[in-house]
Image (cartoon, rainbow, N blue to C red; front, side):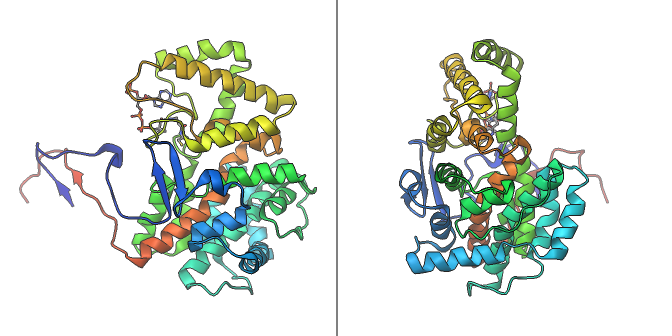
Length: 377
Ligand SMILES: CC(C)(COP(=O)(O)OP(=O)(O)OC[C@H]1O[C@@H](n2cnc3c(N)ncnc32)[C@H](O)[C@@H]1OP(=O)(O)O)[C@@H](O)C(=O)NCCC(=O)NCCS
């Protein structure tokens, strides 16, 4: 449907539009708070990633027994069936950006369901299979891009340990596992962001969950959304030293170039995830390039805040700004940052796909028609 007329207000970017209800997460943009199922992220980062994804997907933190069951499921379901691995290997060899490869493969990741099940609805199980297989898919793309041999499937049931072992073939330190899982926890869900909304739009058409997840990966890829993580780090590389930060920011603001990792549609104060991730980055980036880039980012952050001080709407670092330093310190190449983001956010997407379908109505907004006047038939 389209409409015509002068009095109609168009909400560009759907800003401020309340499109539906959700019980998954709450973004309190005025006060800079983020809650999953009512629990603040500052408390949740003390838990493991598997515990928090359980909260996001199933609505409550698991007890010990349930946690073991879910960890066992993720370990089992997370192993790529051989034929799927072959298809992915061939796709990855084309050298496309990992997010393009992941978007292409996502619907296929649900094929050949594992022998294990969590006894959920077929809709939810399909989403969980894709989510469980994403780390192995990312590690396989990594191996293809870097031309190194694929790692054997690790026996660890701990999500972060297995992920890093899949990537690097060595057992990470407890500090590395914690830094990785904290980062992943912060990325689990964020209400009706573009990727999640894309997933809900597709799900509202009754398309399979794997198609909804594929669409969400496509949306997350964009530099205004998840892709900002890679772009923020590339910006730090371009700036090179803290001394260059002030003139770089001034130049960006004078020419309309975006400073990647800054600003947010919802937050009017500091993004609470950015505060945690900055501290994590500082802790883990102890030396070498990660430490140096962290210092460059701090200088860009300070210069940006100073030079945008008089704006009515405060612009501050978002989650993407310091995240790359954490990933880089964990030896994850920048081309895989957004894919690692997807590996966490996909659990939020699964929760939203399920929520959408529990009380579904086709998502189909209206446009104000501004084309040539309609002609007689
Ligand atoms: C996140 C983002 C898309 C939010 O966009 P939005 O809600 O549409 O905000 P607007 O574009 O209306 O921003 C308001 C003003 O701040 C400016 N602004 C916003 N983010 C900026 C940034 N990162 N660098 C420079 N200027 C920025 C806009 O140009 C605009 O200026 P104007 O009023 O002179 O036109 C935007 O801040 C951005 O592009 N940030 C960089 C990409 C990024 O980090 N994305 C990850 C988000 S988690």
